[in-house]
Length: 171
Length: 450
Image 1 (tube, rainbow over the protein chains, first blue to last red):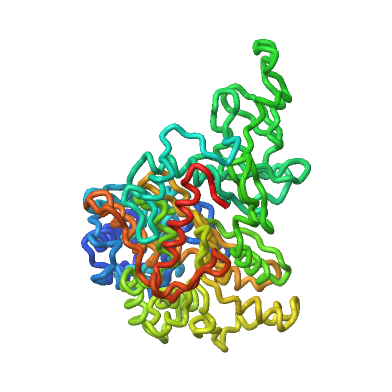
Image 2: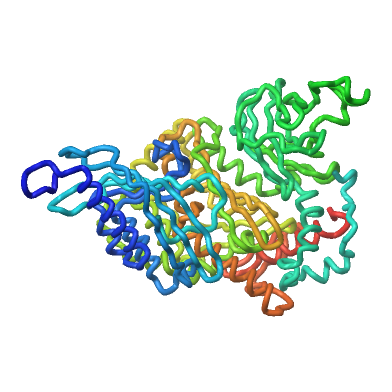
């Protein structure tokens, strides 16, 4: 799972930098409207999850704000691009800020990949209406041939238990 | 609280003005945009009608409490030591401090965080620290210092409703034919009991509260409002194996009924504002797929519990979107309800809940949970388009100098009312809007007519 071509274990600092660059790239795909390219960051059996509470572990008996596999994420992004998707007419402009990147697990050559926690803040501007959503993101990343794939992304919105206006662009 | 069913308010509209605002052909724009009319609605509709406040299963044990609301009033539902459900105002009688800040929990008593006045589960004042500094009438048990209770509360088979008016029709009179929707939801449980579980969602839109129920039984909008999700679902691969077995995509596609399919559906409306769609099974739209193993197992369990014929009738109940005016929607087939909370004249919160059917396979509950997420999550690919339309209606009514909304579609197709209160019409009709305007007029007049 280690990307170093020299056969030596990758330096933790270099690995963290490479992961951080990946998260910045992911954020840019969402901000720049490259939604299909964003979905392609997920592995074929990848999952995207916004739980309805910070302590949620059960995906079947408890509602989720979003719980989708790659195929459903594709459907979601296709809808956003539909000309009659009223909720995104106009499409909100967003700035995703990624920080506090913390490699929690998988610094060696674990076959389960790297578990990375970061903080994401999404500033959203839709017409005259601005809002900010903030979350802890936990990525499980697989590394193949110098390329990361997202096996799972869990987004714990700090707003998860509150009353929302609709969410279109994801964090 | 009103001592009678005659509204007591200073800025009241005359009955003639109420009538002028609420024509069945279209509500006056000001009924969606005028803050004074909204305040009067809170007094005369939400201050008098039976409003759904919760379900028994939210507070099963002594001391369990659940915060809830009627209009602007914040409530506590409490299971007291005699197992009775109390519906109390969530405010200390000393200085008005909000008593409970947690959404729900279990307590032996309610202690105000300000000066530690304590109240029993029945609302009675039980302790006041530093009692000797207060005058004689401030003491444990003082009736005038008990937590205020709603004027009336009652439940229909576990669905708890409250009214802020001390007199008026009974809950069952108020619900009328809509009790059948609650009956059907409960009958779908092999053990004939249901539990509100799985969490809930609250979503907000910048629009008037009436817009939600005006939309819910409008069968013409899905082809336009939900076109993006219908088209996308239809274009999605049919061989793809989805994490939810295709439930989300199927729900999105379901708004794309053809004209012919909608034609099998009949709208029912009642003089008190309630309405539902009927005929879904007759038209074959919701026919069960033969290879649905979960549904087959569930059907077999229900047949064993209730008998084959009864199970057939229960599952064949063909009502959809049972709207209890002013603010409850019951979806018996998918074990869901929605509640509409008015916040201000142009701000509304929708809360969605689902139920576990006791005795049914777990997978049936998982589907109900998924249904709730797909439809009422703030990230819903379906509902977000409805909410956007509500906001655009609100903006148009606020800015475009329209005198009235127009709700005349299909009026010529409405039948004569049966026993004066029950209309039917074709699926394309705006009958639900017309009965809702009748109900608005009935409740908004100074005295509620029978």
